[in-house]
Image (cartoon, rainbow, N blue to C red; front, side):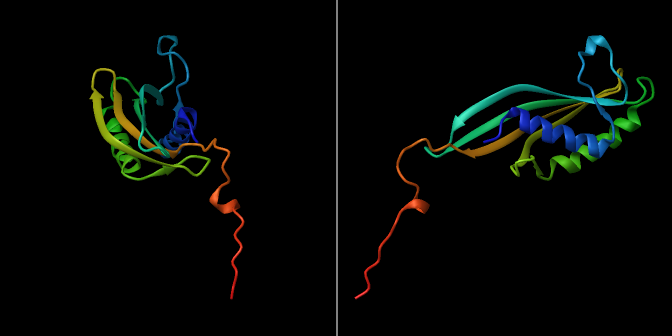
Length: 146
């Protein structure tokens, strides 16, 4: 199974490679470099889809800070287009788990030159089997031919 940290890492690496900017991992009040971006976990909904699968929805937010807080509107539009392409595809975690996106919305703050993107990551995962019964692959079968 993968967790929130795996999803954030895959997103961070992908966005950093697409935009070629640093990740802002400091508190906003401490100051930060521009351009940079920040990913925040807003909420996680855990559901059991069936007796064998979990269906988790991660509600995430990303903030992209333009190079210049005074004249970065055009830059924000370009970043939005690059992110649009990423969100329309699937990305993978290091474990090979595919991440898909839903309900992607972009908001541009013209005063601060910040692109605020909200989105959901959907994850369907098999519930780990903790039973003592042998797995089907481990059963011994004897076939008598007559």
